Length: 214
Image 1 (tube, one colour):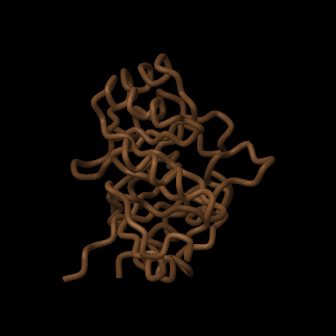
Image 2 (cartoon, rainbow, N blue to C red):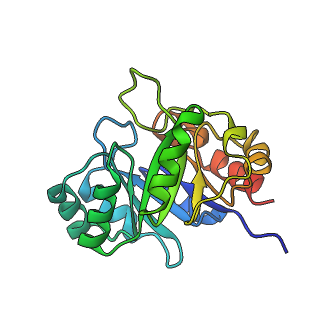
Image 3 (spheres, rainbow, N blue to C red):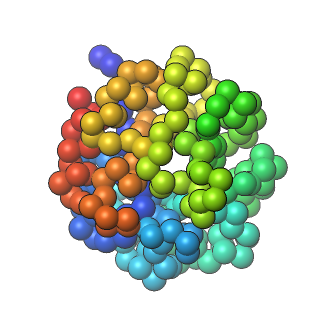
């Protein structure tokens, strides 16, 4: 039997989105704690959303260069299972966050060309998981969720010491190709299941998960 694909729906902002992700078979749901993002949720809203996620679905907090005070505030109010560091956090910072909170830490690494692959190796030695994402455009305020893909052939056949997840420009139309080219067993989508920036479409979530989970 082939290993099942795990899907993460990131940037959820509504109970309808959470329900759609769970119903479609997503194994991870992501909440964005980055105010510049159209998918940003405040702590009060996030706590309500996270409380509705059933057992067995991993609740992920996406943060960007957050300090301990902000991480403390998130975890004091929101029942989170995993921290996703999506900024310029160093390997040392990843280790410090793991030590302080005792939660699994996923580090996002942007890829544009072969020069970026060394960072994946470095973070693969310290994070619990790595998120292989498309590097954002130079002038972008968003470290992710830009709807951009990178050349998946760059990581074809590559593996790291920890589980990894593929992100960046994935849609129901290209996710099967991405899985086939990279061998990814975990997939992350945000803008690819939205009707407009920050607005998740339950039908698109269902279609994406069906395409990824075949």
